[in-house]
Image (cartoon, rainbow, N blue to C red):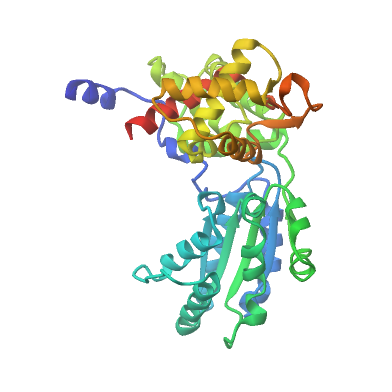
Length: 398
């Protein structure tokens, strides 16, 4: 086994640093997002000049750079503030990771006061403690809430309401808390009260989808950091840009480039060829986000695998709820898991729909004895089945 590991580690690779293609990497420059960076700087200018808190929303579809734009802005803005002797912290929180408003606030507070015991605290008390800390340190906080629309759809608007109104209710000498909400869809605001809605209606930064030329610029910039010189065939970046431009999705483009590089390594090739790009495209899909699949609990993954297999095997576009529930019991038996109740399965289906992985539609009452039909929105069932099988295996062995 040691010999195998040593052999693999010593194999040549086309990569100089493959982490430069990760969605978590913040590059030194963001091609074609300079205007949005400038817009954020204009919004938060008052925080540095007048110490007045601000609220902004960043919105756009998947792969338009919402997260990286926010993180890059936070990185640069805090440096500028430091040069002016103003202490500003930027914290980026992905709300999809947390199930409740309390857990979101708890995670933020623990960032600054790791030893604090929060049992018995209310959300408002957590926020007061956080603000008291920043008051005592004469610091300011820019809090970025990623996937905020998803969180509001699951938990309601309490988190948004509490944070947006903190400046009005706080007893502090200065407004210590500023917010950046990162959302795919501004429709989440429909559930908010008028006071909170009025606070959020200004300062919206819209990110448009990338075109093929812009995607190629992004790929070229990242490829220079990620790959050894001369390993990319000349057609690779234009091909990936053309493929990903259908969705305007930079994350998908970067994933295709990374996968093509891994395939080159797997075939011991010194060149990343267009054929590897085509193979990478066959193995993935822009609508499938592995991080979203990973965050599903084990039973949700089992139910999704049931749906995927059923649609793949029957070759139908839709499956009825009753059919899926019956097949779900078989999949649970395969994985030695106890099937959940009918009511719980319905909750899982709602969760999968909220994540955009499936779609459901009501049918005529009594049709085949079922009330809903389920489909996969433009996602190849075979690709999704492969990913789920791998994740379920990891879950069993983890």
